[in-house]
Length: 306
Ligand code: FAD
Image (tube, rainbow, N blue to C red; front, side, top):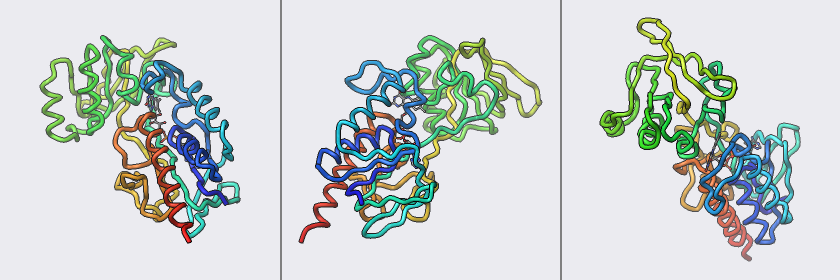
């Protein structure tokens, strides 16, 4: 049995592991893919004190830092169920199970993809999902944002200040973002909004994005826009399906946590993109991972008091 069992090996899980291990308590990290989303990232330029790095390099650095301590890393293991109790049990897809006096859930999230030709081929070569991360790479260029909900409209407003022109593409007949965001969007001169448009393909020249095609749904006509970047903003899905019903989740499936990272289940803490914390970023996930580990430690010393 671990004192702290962490599920997830991204920035949140890795930070939690370092903080827990430094308290001299038995720490384990269980991860389907140690490194998490940063493995799919190219340039990282906003992790403070690291001016510039690459995702896979950052993932190696996370692992090296964790391995500098006595942490049991169980990589390539998928968790499937959480059983609350005095000792919290995590059941694995391989039939085994691992227990912790406390558990930190740091299972992250995944971007919803549009699944059109070109999206996978040009990922990181013009197809992007995070305006805070990749916006500056498109300075002075023409880009599109797909999705007219709050995140799409916020992304379009954000990008309009950096790029030359933004085309916002929405599948439905109108934007779904809050009116205040739509008003701000309409006030910008370098944004074009296209509604009732179904994106059908992202084009490229073999090395980078060159355009996007969509069907104008009322007429059925196919149209093409030339541009160099496409930001897909149709939702971020938290990896929390397997503890639905055990741990309280928001209506978006995010783990509900308080300011200390405590979930609705005693002894279970959470951090990072899987939680309700706003702004899904590496530096934020890492900070919250540290916070969850300190909260788990606090829980342990209180529950072991005579
Ligand atoms: P994740 O990184 O998602 O890690 C989740 C971990 O949990 C993984 O190890 C995963 O394998 C594991 N896991 C999930 N489910 C299970 C399960 N059932 N059983 C066992 N393990 C499980 N942020 C920035 O700050 N700067 C950037 O430049 C940047 N660029 C990005 C570019 C791309 C393409 C993407 C996709 C994201 C980018 N982000 C960037 C966002 C950043 O990667 C995330 O905010 C951050 O990785 C979240 O960390 P996390 O630890 O919460 O989750």
